[in-house]
Length: 491
Image (cartoon, rainbow, N blue to C red; front, side, top):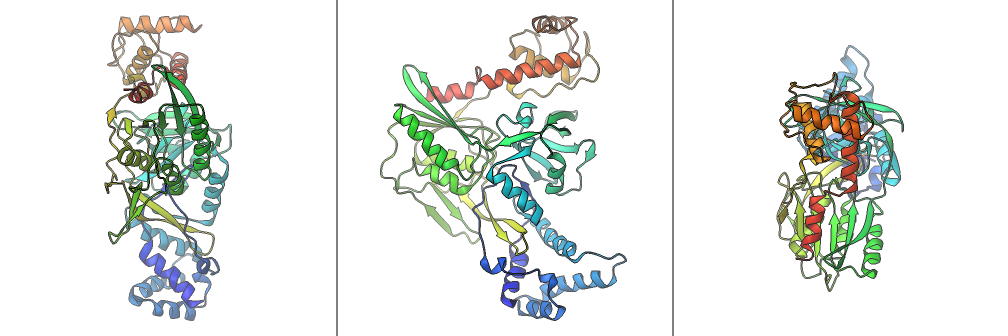
């Protein structure tokens, strides 16, 4: 028993990192298990003499004794009675905070259960991956067709309030518990967006977020049949589903393939590894892993021959982690083009370590490197063909508390002008000044959509403009990045 607890305590002392990531789908994390740890009971439940004996067995007994001494001082002398498990968890979280690593996190038993449920099927919420970045709850990427995507949440949006309650000072899981909720209920988020002077207030109706992760289709470009596979995250069944769709497309005779991982926040490392084995031959690694000592391990497939058709990967600022592994590996090891804009930039790998009581630590243990040994952390994968989407794809939500009319000037008017231009109307400017041309464009939009055609930008008009923009984006008609990716296959 003593050896078991010694392993746990040394793990706490030496391995725990700081910050937190709440992957609303899954983080890049193969799982490490320990039968010895799983059989153990809580350290705090041991008699004091056994605790002290275990601590004295540790290599750095003075340091661990200091932790235990603080625990006993608080238990014996603090003004209020403190729950011992709360103190132990506080000590663990305190050590996490010293590493300033947003991807290493402690999860209590309840959080672990929720996390496992999300991995297995679906979950109820807004559908976004969030992380703690510089102390603020930050959007990594919204999930395809989720309330978060439809409401216009974007990577790097920072959540300040949930239902008018500040999340400042909360850890990530506490903040996320406020954001999540039953399907059909509404949550209001106050958002700080880089480059936008005013905070945004966004209402989202929570939904059941399914975890279907692979979609495919074919299209014809210059007389050639091209395949498209979209991967929305890398979960347990993603590699198998990808293989099924790839086989189906190849049977249909595709002459090129686009793999779309835009807005894909990542997932299981094993999943993306299995996908890469379909394309990268055994002559070179498809990725490398480096530990804290600088020791590198090369990962190589058994594939003898690569594909006889060109491959292009689509990325954007919401492509993170496993998505970036896929993109840079195919870029360097399979001569694939990468189309879009620079990706998010997460180059570390986490593993979950059970703590014996149902809780776990998700800990950063490795860097992942490209086939050529490049580390994209905080840099992202740069596209070989850089393509921005039309301006209305990036337009901020229109916040209307009172109607805007001719001669007003406001950032929200500018947001509406960008969207109107994207919808085919002509406001003549996008600087936020409510001109006569803007008034005419709004009046025409209102007339075309059976609204009172008074030329005012009111709440009803603003909401319909945004709805029409979302519908147009989802149809993909102006998807310049996808068009460029398909064209790159036939150049």
